[in-house]
Amino acid sequence: MPESRMDGICATTTLEPPAEPSAPAPYRWRWIALWVLLAAEAMDMPDALVANVAAPSIRADLGGGASMTQWLGAAYALAMAVGLITGGRLGDIMGRKRCS
Image (cartoon, one colour):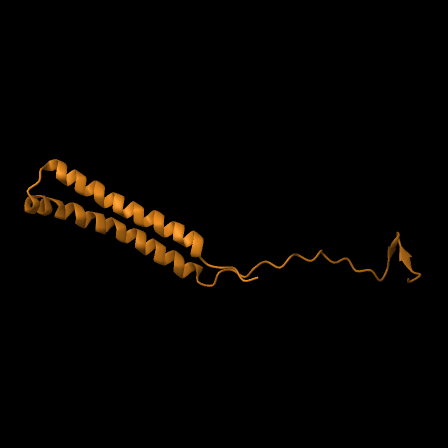
């Protein structure tokens, strides 16, 4: 222990900030993944538009009424929701694994 002291602190002592825990490296492809998701979401709108535009032709070919057009829209929305929920759950289960 050195003999020179100033106000109770050793003169050779350096004050260093405490070491921060090492944070994991950010996901490398996060911006590309964001743009892919945004593009997929944007493609949902024209897809629904195409289904609505084609609905009168489908109704005429199948010989249905106005209620058939409503059922067609509801079935399309239901199929889209089932795919979205299933894809989200599969992404949670089998998604990106963190290295240890």
